[in-house]
Length: 108
Figure 1 (cartoon, one colour):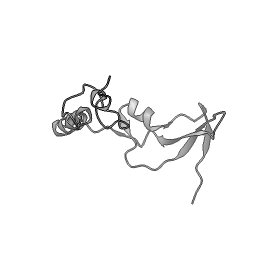
Figure 2 (spheres, one colour):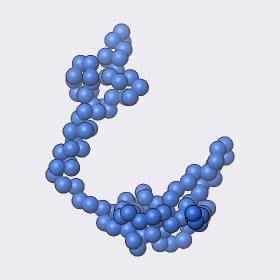
Figure 3 (cartoon, one colour):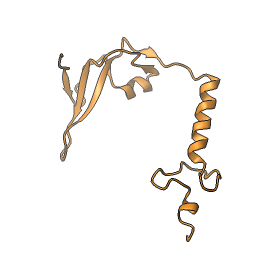
Figure 4 (cartoon, one colour):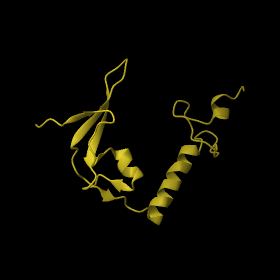
């Protein structure tokens, strides 16, 4: 097992990027292994860790197909549908409630 190089916050060399940075550039890791870690210090707990990938080995993001768009729309609609009243709440139903706010708190 080899240890990864660890860089401090904002001190990673050029050519390395996090998943979010790759995604913002229209790229994805493409199956490559993590090459380094980035640590951001925090006062109260341990440092935040982000994994770094080589930008030169990153691949373009796959385009959304019509089937994927439809599946995503269906999944988002299911997250908005209340299981009690079967109505579209117009927002994502909180997992803590498990139903829309009017069904969870009928006395309001």
